[in-house]
Structure formats: structure tokens, C-alpha cells
Length: 354
Image (tube, rainbow, N blue to C red; front, side):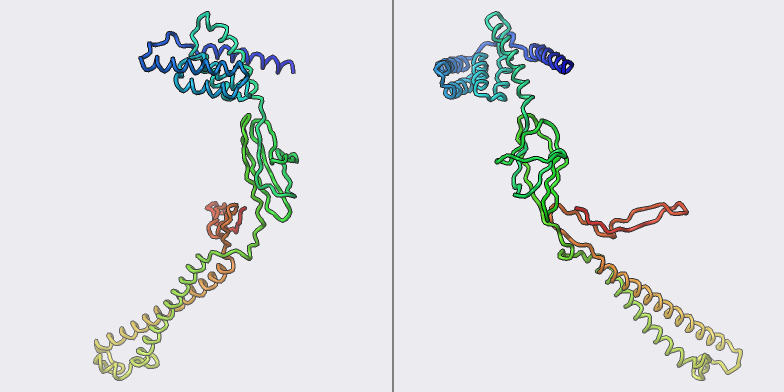
């Protein structure tokens, strides 16, 4: 405690020196124009009315008159000092600090103002210390009956206005209630004398079965599966067409008489037309094999995509439009992980983060 007291005293002494140095008075007032001189005279007249009201104990009227005088001419140190004292007496320390500092800036360093400057510096230090020691206020709005409030890991009970006084700084807020999602604010900053409003929203837990689903991937896979199956069907038709043509020209794998005659080839002959006939038969076989293979591949891909479509439909992510929900489709959460060969792989997960 003694060490803290010494430190505070040193801080106040340093602040006093800074005030005297950082808030210098005007060296010499500049000459006023005719309009400025007229405004100053009006301000002094209103200021004197304010002084009379102040002495009579009508501090509200005095404050209004001083403000009016300041509005007329804001370069008169005595008006600033009067406003500072009026706000100080009304416990409006924030405004008092502003006008105490204004007085120190405007008041010339001379014998006539020496005492006022000394007293102002002392009171300004006190005002700043009081302002720094003021608690902050957390005001909870929408806090339902039956909710449990925990402030910095300690149960807390707001007053009838939903307010709790706290030290200036950062605080953790957690509100819980049966059959509701917790309301959490891990870092709420509040300054000295500040009132921070916190709107508490306790949401009911979301039943995933009632939420709409995102079938984007399902549609993509389904369309691809349909295209693959359609392609397989086309190749199947082409395969049948080419097989039928082959069977007509090459029944049982041998060229028909018509085919031989067309190429000018006799059975068992070695004419050049026979070479061309054999080439045609081989070409038929290659075309049939290519189309059949393409058909099988297309149907295989279509079957795999159909299975993937079914899986995607079952695992379609839910869509929650509530402000506290962040939903991530499972196919968008691929993460690289090291494999035995060191080249890495891919994994997938389903996540619904609240």
C-alpha cells in the first residue's frame, strides 16, 4: 500500500508539472478587431449577470449565462474559469476538466492570475483523479427472468435497471438459461464513467432436422451422373449400329459374298481387294471395341456419380440464417494432411459452428 501511495503521489506531481508545461498561457493577447471587442464587451456583461446568479445560489442560471457569454467570446479566461467552477459544483467533472484546461491555456502568466492558475492546477489534478477512479457501468438490456449472469467468472446480479458497476477495463460476460443457447461476450471494454449497453439475446437451440438444406453439390453430381449415363447410352446405340453393320458384311467373322464381290476378292484369293476387305473387317472390330469400351466407361462413371449423388443428398449441409450460426458445407472443409510418402493427402469433415 505504501509503495502504491508513493507511486500515485509521484504520478500526480508529474501530472502537475505537465499541466503547467503542456497548457501554456497566451503570451500576449492579440489586438481585437472592432467586432471582437464588441463581442467581448457583450460577453463580459452577460458574464457579470452569471456571477450575480452564482452568488445568489442559482447555479443552473449561472451556468447558462456563462455558456452564453462563452458563445459570444471564447477567449476570455475568466469566463472559462467560471464555467469550470459551475460544472464542478454541479458534479459534471468531464465538462469541468474541459474548462479548467481552457482557463490554463488562456490565462496569462502574471501576478493577477497566479493564484487562480495555482488553484486551478491543484483542482484539475483532483478532478482527473476522480474521473479516473469512477467505475464503469454495464447495462444489460433484454435480460430475461431466470437467466444466470456471470461476469469475469463470478456470478453477478444487475440492479433493477439492469446495471452493474465495474472497474474500468475489459470484462468477460456470459449469460445462460435453460433451453437457450449461451450468450457470450469474451471481451467487453468499458472506460471510467462510461455506460456500456449490452443487448442480451438468448436463442433457442436449433433443431438441424427443421433447417433447409443446401443441395448444390447434389445437383452438380446428379447432372454429371445423368450426362455420363446419357453418354453411355449414346455409345451403346452406336455400338449396336456398328455391330449390326459388321454382322451384315462379316457374318460369323467372315466376309459375305457381297462384301467380297464389292472389293473384287474371291474366297481364299490374294487379290489387292482382299487386303482392303480384311482391313475393313479389322476397322469394324476396332470401332465396335472402342464404342463398347466407351459405353462401359460412361456407364461406370455414371453409376459412381449416381452413388455420390445419393451420398451428397443424404449429407447435404443445413442452412441456418440465424445471426449466431456459421455453417460450413462438408465438401468445403478439405484439409491437407501428411501421408506415408510425404506428399500429403486430403480429408473431409462436416462442421456446424455456433
